[in-house]
Image (cartoon, rainbow, N blue to C red; front, top):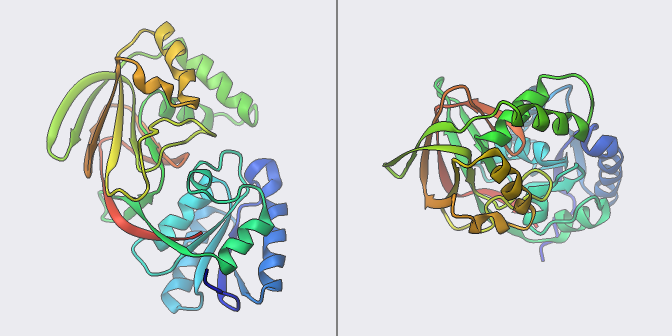
Length: 300
């Protein structure tokens, strides 16, 4: 155990995470961190882009010793994009709806006191992260799972609607897409080996779960230096409806239409697909990404 009391903590809170529980848990965590002797540097902003800007400025100026994010997988995504490739560790106050990355890393969920105890007195763990370089030369990172199939199409549809809110919006988006969805022609290139297929879903996994407990690639590990690429090859919609619910237990991987290929560098190509990573809108296909071993330090 390491005592990190009296460190300067760059804190970013998402007030809307977990149906607005992010603000409550974030404020509680801030009070507990201050009580533990930490100096709090509030890096929260009106949106993610401004929080990234403030966080990077603080890291560059060395005015903080660690970044702590309070929210769901989206905030973990933001934190990873701040600290990947640096020596600045990331603390996670899991306060969102899904919290998949925090849960799979064995971190407390919706418990500010336990999370602050880990941040103040716990150890550190080096894990992998996944890097994508945009056509403009900017680096974008993700920690858990990149979705680039039916799941991404549903996300894109739901995010285009202002109403209804919450899970119902996604349920309606699923119903809408099921009526029109057709297998997607993909080129999936893994470590230089090209695969052409029609598929319902392609996921690139550094961690095992997404979407609030869906173990889409249960074999994926955060620190093995590899990506697990899951391909659900073409099946009928009724078969998709039978197979997809099994994802909550990871039992879908036994279906003959499911293939998992491991590698370090992945290129995905398909028309009209926008990929989502850690639940956040990421980049349109085609895109390339690679695992970077030990790119991130987590406070555990």
